Length: 140
Image (cartoon, rainbow, N blue to C red; front, side, top):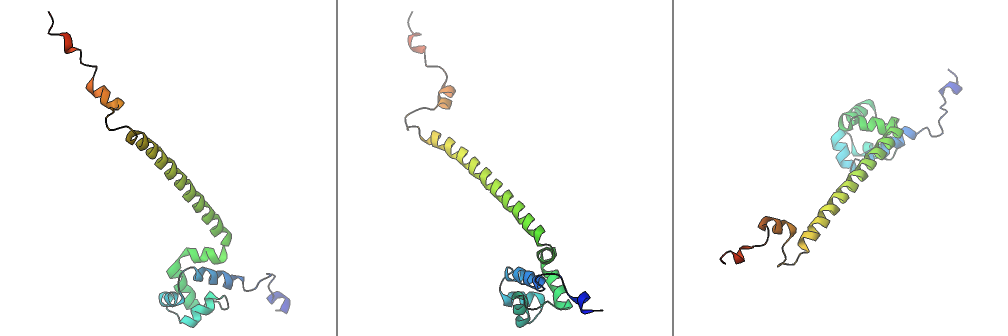
């Protein structure tokens, strides 16, 4: 093969190593990751820095530990960004619904608690029925 066929047309030949490093940095401290993937701390630190690519044994342990999330983060970052955007939108919508629900409850409670102690509410008045008209029953 010639040199031309061995050359990559990618601007950054270390892009996959950098993506893996960014993913590993987000997973916790170096010592913890090294323990989880059964690798030396120096090896994990080099992978986190994006300087080295893991050997097959380490790559397999990384995949066992982090699942398909690591594959998406390294090879399909656009999918991760789209998924994170969808999840963020869902969280925002859920937050808006919680706020709306809480404000409705707060308004209802405010009106119930706003009554003075001696006042009867409309519900209380309906339970009592009409005013007592027995005052004149004793009259002939």
